[in-house]
Image (tube, rainbow, N blue to C red; front, side, top):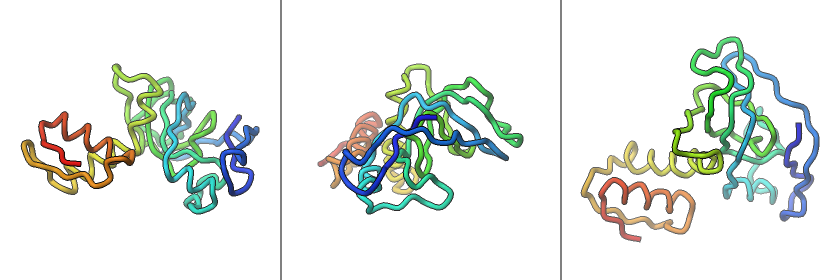
Length: 170
């Protein structure tokens, strides 16, 4: 498969399209044909050599969020089947033609989102939603101050609270 590979720490010029081994499914893991992948601050830091990939993740292929179609499933997968449109988050490796991900880290793409839109959801919108509503307990009508309004998670937080009828201060 083709993948964006970090050839050495540095700027964008260190990225190269290379042929690498296609990952194999096993257990509860799913292989997704990537149709779009996000680029996050962590990807940029990894490219610069400041953010090492977690264990068991390709150290030289960036990409933490993606959208695509399930291509293959491991023998213990129960929640998904080939052909489904999904988005998800991984520790790295999503800027490739295929990525493997645990079945629990996938979400079905809603009908109203295309692959590019869906690839922008997992890292920033799910992080913002979790921080605001699950961890922070934000309720309808409450006020919110967003300090990091210029970041991806910050801009997602602003959009989510506006949709929820909250007042936002930036």
